[in-house]
Image (cartoon, rainbow, N blue to C red; front, side, top):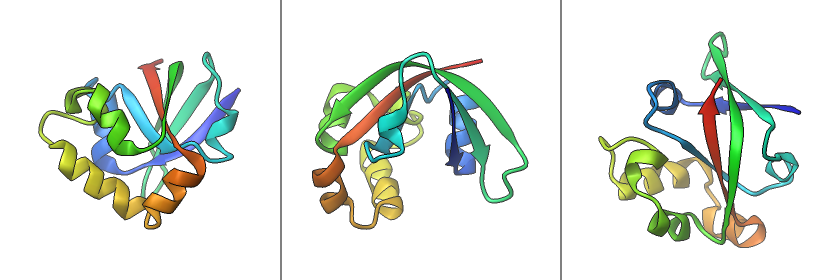
Length: 115
């Protein structure tokens, strides 16, 4: 199955250059459909005129983003140019009700490989 997800330019480039190998999302209804072996097509915001595809090679479930960050270095969650605190701030921007949503759904780390 192929899934589509939107990505900000910075994180889009981190995946393309090989540093970001785990995509972080809420484990909401949409992400609950993802299975190992599926394909994800990432669309670069804001214009969605650039894209690439990855293969899902692993799925990691956690209660919170911070729990996930205890197990993985920033260099594979984003890029070593960022700190974990900066990435948490970015996630809070996208998930404005972060604590409630994390409590409701949990979070998902999607291990990916470029196709």
